[in-house]
Image (cartoon, rainbow, N blue to C red; front, side):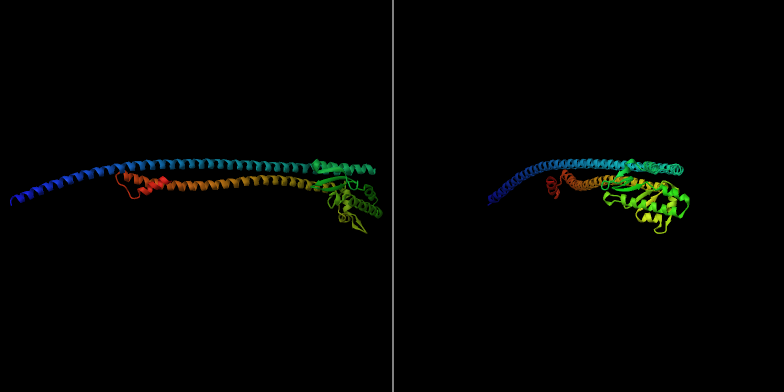
Length: 365
């Protein structure tokens, strides 16, 4: 009976020893497995850290390259815009200088023409009492007319002894006004004027009749629509005194002589009034030249405007690229910050729940 308790105690002790040995063996296997698991996790973290570092380097290189391209395009656009502005400014300055020089030159010529007109008027008054032949007086009027034309207009703006192709008539001079012609006749009937010295009504009637016939002949021969003439012609009177008599003469049948001439589109002009007309024509020609220069300038400005619009398009695209690059940089910076924080936590032995998502997102981008 006593042996049985001893046996049971011995068996219990042996059981306890066996359980203790089993527990110790199990504890050693758990520590080995835990150590292996820790080593595998550290190896995996090192691999993931290396992959994330590679992705971050790639993203930073891409952003740096895009920013370099954007900087180059911006510098090129700014340089091209500055060059276009400089060229436009030089062209405008050139055109303005040319116009100013032309106006100064025209003003000088106007003064010279005025002086020439005054001298010519005095000379004709002196010579009209000496020259008696009709042919000689006609030549004097042509010479005076040609002298004023050469002093007042460029050679290309007028022609002398111009022949009409449709009628064969020859006019003393034509002034070119665009594609139209202004005819000028210098064959004034001076004989009728000389007879006014008799101070008789008959001489006055003869003077009015001669002037009317001469004006009718000018209107018939030199106002020709088919020849591209203007609707009026000029009757050049080579003396201010003769022109004054024409203005003051009145015909009982046809009224004032000057109004009759204007009624048939023939305008009497003295040296002074003809000078004024030449000045207006010269200004008109200068205006046409300025208009032509302005058209060229406007065309060049249109080209500059088009180039500026192209630059504006490039500039807008550049701004879009810069905004996209900035957004990409901000996104990458935010992700890099999150990855850096996760790496710092993992380096301290902690594995945050968001680490796999961050690593996967960085690897995908």
